[in-house]
Length: 343
Image (tube, rainbow, N blue to C red; front, side, top):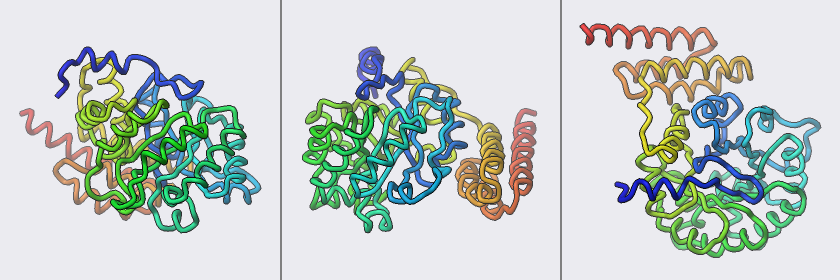
């Protein structure tokens, strides 16, 4: 796939400079609503010690009216490099929220201008800003003036196939002070369907001087390599590929640094991490964490004999012990099967 591995690796040997922040990894973990809380980020960090991680996106309006900071905004002092992602359509509220993010320890502040979900776009946030480039400029300008850390933007190609506006939009963001832009190579109308069109990322990269990060359909090391080769992007951001698989960011980062693949985790190793994830959610959020864990547990339970039955059980767990019993039972089954094969 790679015509010249040494040249490819040389290209990514230098730090990724986001304004005055230098990253030792060109692979980033995407902010994911309902996923990238502190518990999940700790697992990703274990395998990707140098990568930029992101909080779930936080509403600047909600933050303005809260008396105390939400759990979504909580970060660990050992998490660096870490970015807090914000969304809204009010420049003043976003500037205020950015200041709170920096006070919490954010190394960069990311503004979400790509979320396609209706409840976000109807309020003027997320990808709706692709249709309001002047307002998007006001937002970035206000946030840049409010904080002394780099401000970045995550966005999409455009509203739909008729309105692919990313080239003009990205240039506007650069011109008003954004220090990096991440492009999810789908339109808002696509949501998460169809195939990411990486060719547009290549065009953005050619048009800008600031770092451009490629996002969309990065489900494997091979996909990341292909994307970087095709787009010339400065790095990749992993999103859905890390659901139930917190190893991916580290696997890609390892390849970019060494030219070698890490061994794939076994099904048993994945389920052991699932147990740790479940325990962490319980300790961090109590019963709310158990409710949230069901989707995570289902993502871990895939790719082995009995996975479908395990997923069905994990989607209905009511307590920490329920989940641990399910996972331990599946691990014993896999160990037994492996033992029989060994004989």
